[in-house]
Length: 337
Image (cartoon, rainbow, N blue to C red; front, side, top):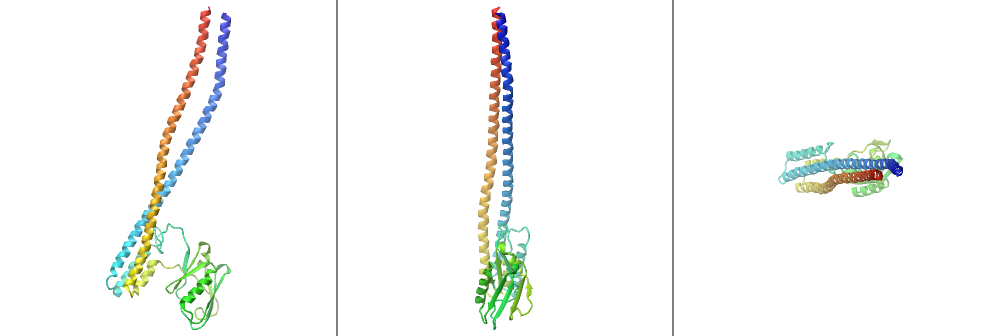
């Protein structure tokens, strides 16, 4: 009987060792898999956090530019308001010159790189729209002439525009005729006083930026070899007002023009304020996402510790049960004697 008990003890011990060895690789594999998964999830969380930080920084920069634009719009509006009040009183030639100089100074401020407004009184943060150029004011294509004329304009890519001016044709009729001919090349045309302003989309802007070859039969462009010329960038809206201030005949009419510019500034101000609301909402959403992620990380760590404790308790329970089996065999051996 003693021999049988020893055999049973040996068999139980061997079985316990075999089960323990078999369980070790599986436990290591499970632990490695969980560790890899945990590391992968942690890395993804870090990438997500960095991505949100990058977006937050970009939104913050846009918000700073937005606030700068609002400040500059308000300042320009107030400066124009002061000029408009000056026009309530009769203006001498010297005072008109002073108003013109003040407008030119405001225009020069808009030409700086860091300004939020362009000389055309548009937000510099907005994507570039149509490219605008103007024809040299020395070339008059609007005034009526006593004789018929033909003008050929050579554009880039070998394109040509032919303009026919009948004798005595009015300025409005000449403008309509030219608008029709340039429209064939996706070029818009409008008049600003005696100055012609040409506009083209981004894909057609080279038709205006590259030199033109003009050849005519008449007075506007004398017959002979083609004349090469370049269009010029149009002057800013404040520069136009500055020039008009020197020939100010009707102060009320001039006040109305200043009021139109102020109205445009008010529209841009509302646009800037609307954009700021969107940016602030987006920034708050990003900050809230970061806060929620921090809470989720704390919860994830707590859950992981809980799982590890549960796994540890199960391992301890298995060891106690194995130890109990061995002890039982020893007791049975002693009693048998």
